[in-house]
Image (tube, rainbow, N blue to C red):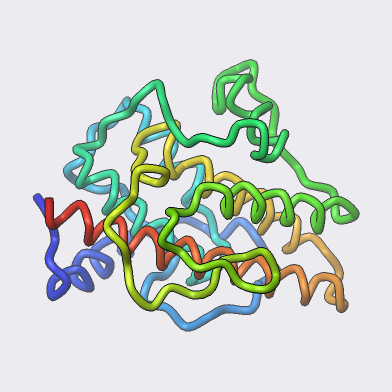
Length: 221
């Protein structure tokens, strides 16, 4: 089932009826959004699949902006009928090494190890996430003076580089945002943390805008 723009807000509202405890005492600065943690497991998704593990992994309390992005990811996976594929996002040589290690270790299995970004490394990690994300943008996006793309005001019709579903798709972006955000939560409330949160939120905003465009593109197909 696909969701129109008019009933999408109803979908997001229905995601938010679970009552899991909050894992953090600290709160990140929030950008106003409609979705609150925790999200409820989609009723039309199957248990015991790749999606259940992925959902539990990304469904943590990192603020409304993060939750909004996770909600849109759920919608994208629904459009893709909860499928997963062996192939996925390109740019393996540019993606964070932590992500590669997580994937190689099996993500959630017994061999997997928790990824923890040290505060002294968070700026470098965030920069790597941005470099990888930037390398995967469609050619119709205009580059800005800071080697990041300008905010999107109109979507193009080429989405091949970002049109990936399942365990090797947008889940990888969300995993990076989770580790990045968790590190910021642990940091002292000083200038580096404030700047880091702003950069993290900018990444979330840009990814949210693009996943919304991808959803609209796939709904038209």
